[in-house]
Amino acid sequence: MLKDFFIGLSQNQFLNSAAKKYGLKMGAQHVVAGTNIAETIESIKELNRHGISCTVDNLGEFVFEKEEALAAKEQILAVVEAIHENEVDAHISLKPSQLGLDIDYDFCKSNIQEIVAAAHKYGIFVNFDMEDYGRLQPSFDLLDELSADYDNIGTVIQAYFFRAEEDLHKHKNYRLRIVKGAYKEPAEYAYQDKATIDENYIKLIEWHLLNGKFTSIATHDHNVINHVKRFVKEHNISNDKFEFQMLYGFRKDMQLELAKEGYNFCTYVPFGQDWYGYFMRRLAERPQNMNLIVKQVFNKKTNTMIGLAAGAFALGRLTKKK
Image 1 (cartoon, rainbow, N blue to C red):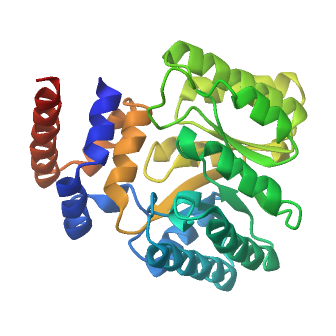
Image 2 (image 1 turned 90 degrees about the horizontal axis):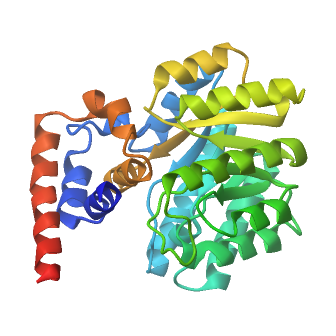
């Protein structure tokens, strides 16, 4: 129910529009690194000063107009140039749906190829973020096809999918980010039980640490992090084979501590105006995230907006039931 609630909020047009208009006043600066590239580069520099690398996400997804996809491509290309020109320790995370996957596969591939080629020229890695199940296989197809010409790409394995282990083994020679999964998926494709997902998550992490190229462990869960610390020590796995990842603004003290301990650490750095849907999906992914950041983000204005949207969402559900 709580996951459905946050996903419902992420899709609320009133709240998303308000967030774009009042983003900084509502606390957006705590969950996004900037609303433009210049602000984002300054945030990256600050993280770099603490020994933390970054992966940069231009917020936005589920694009259905070519003009919007082309605009997103140009924005990401500008980020690639900014990373190179400012010599910051950062790479790119992109969503195929933002670049036209729902419009035309070849159109999307051409857009992504242009970004990957530009990044390759500067030695910048590009991660293909994974989305919901309907976009899963096409995203893997894009990765497999483009990897014939480029070696600076990788992707994400979502532990809640039944097929996750098979996908992990098939792509073990890629740099992979392993996550639990943030979308609401049907029982025919994905595990629904938290304990089962957690168990599979650990299983995938351990296998890739032992057999894969490079593992990005994306979690805010200190229990998982401590488990990984013990596992790599027991199996004599070098620190240069993996990194921990967390979202910008979440568990900042732990991010700094892990970097100080000598572990590779990467912060997922989103930027842009479309921050609210992104943030709600992070809460849907793990409602405990609310406790990690609520005091920093939510002020009187934000709580009012959420209350209005929550009421609309609840009313909508009751109407559907009738």
